[in-house]
Length: 178
Length: 412
Image (cartoon, rainbow over all chains, first blue to last red; front, side):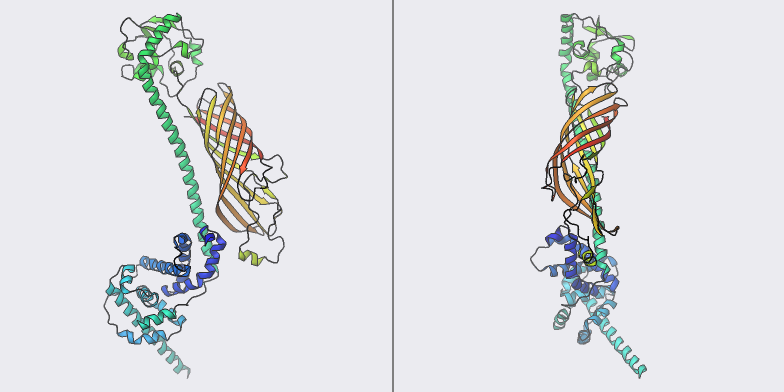
C-alpha cells in the first residue's frame, strides 16, 4: 500500500494482479460488452491509484475497490445519457419468474445482463446484486424511487424474456437437428 | 428479498480475467498523467520564480524611489543652504568641463536637462531638487564650478532661478547659484544624487562543469541508482540471460551536465554585488558496460545560489569580477529509461528527495555592449561539502568540479 501511494509501478502492478479479477466481474455486469468492461476497468484502476490515499483502512481494500468500480460505472452511466428509458410504471408481475434468472449459469446471466439497456442494467445491478435500496439508487442516479422500481421491474421482465427467447431458439435448433 | 440475496450470493465470487494488454495500457496512462504533472510542476516553478524575482525587485525599487523622493523633498531647504554655505566657505571657483561631463555615466532612469527645462514650471519637486542639490564637493571629482548669482544656464539660455522653480524658501538674500553650462541630453544623476539608486541586474547563464579525474565517477552528482529491481515481466523474460542485472560495481558514463542559471543581482556598493536566483540543472548517466538490460537515468535539480560579486576592474567597456558563494541544489526528479537490446522498454519519472550543498568560487569577464547589456564568460571551482542523495554516502571524496559559464546580463 505504501509503495502504491508512492506511485511505485511494481506495487501498483501487484495490486492490479490481486484485484483485477474481481473488478473485471463488476465491470462486466455494468457494460454492454467485454471491450466496454475493459475500458471501465482501466478507468477504475487509474482512479484507484489516484485516490488510494483517501482509503481509510476501516474496511477491506477489496470492498473499497469494488465500490470505486461501481461508482466509476455509474459515472459512465451518467455521461452516456442513455438513461431516458420509458418511465412507465410496471407491476411486479415478473417476480414469480425470477427463478428462471437464478437458474442460469453466471456467465450466461452476465451476457444477458449486458444485453439490457444501460438504464435497466444499472438499476438491476445496483438493486439485485449490490444491494442498494430504491431510495439509494434514486439518489445515486438522480431519479425518483418510482423510476428506479419501474426500471428494475422492466429489467427483470426483459431478462426473463431474453432467457425464454433463448430457450425457444434452442428448442427450434433441436427440432431442426432431429 | 430472498431472491435478491440469492443473486447477491451468486455474484459474490464472480470475476473475469482481464486481457493481457490491459496492464500495459493502464501503466502507459499513468506514465502520461505523471509526465503532465511533472511538466506542469516545472512550468509552475519557472513562472513562480520569475514572478518572485520581478516582484522583489519592483518592491525594492519602489521603496528606494519613494525614500529618495521623501528625502529629497525634506532636504531641499537644508541642501540649498548647505550648498551656499559650502560655496562661501570653500570659495570654490568651479567650472564644469563638458569633456569631463561626457565621461560621466549616463543613467537611463534620470531625466535629462531637456526634460528638466520642459517641466520646470510643473510642481515636480524632485526634478527641480536635483538641479539644486548640485554639490561639487559631493559628486564631481576634479570638477570646477563657476559661480554666478541667480541664474542657471539651461539649453544654452540663461534661466532665472526662482523660488517658484525650485520650491525654496530662502529669503534673506539672493541665492548664489551655480552657473552650469551643460550639454543637451546630459543626465544629472551622477552629479546630483548623494545616494545611488538601487540597480538590479538580471542574468541568464548556461553553466557546465567537469571533473578533472575522468576515470572516477562523479558521485558528488546525483547519479542513477544501480540497485533498482527489475519489473517481474522483464525479469521473467530474461532470467536465463547473463548481464541482465546490473551489479554494484558498474561504471557509469556521465553526460555533459547543464545548469541554466537565472539570476538577479543588486548593488551593495560600487564594488560589490549580491546575486541570487534559481539554477535548473540536468545530468544523465549511462552504464559503461551495459548488458542486454540497462537503465539510462537523468536527474533534474533546482538550486538556489547566493553569491557575492566583486568588481576587480570596472571599465567603460568591460568588467573583471571575482565571485564567491554558496550553492544549494535540490535533486527533485529522476527519469529512468529502461533499455533491452537498445530498445526503449520503459520511461519512468519519479520524484526524489536529495540535497547537495557546496561552495563555488570563480572569476568572470564581462564585455559591455552598452550600459544595460553585457555578455560574460567565466570559470570557477565548485566544491560540494554535503550531500544526502541516495547511495552516495561512501563516495564523498571526489566532489570538486571545475565549471565554465557563458551568459548575458542586463540592467533594470
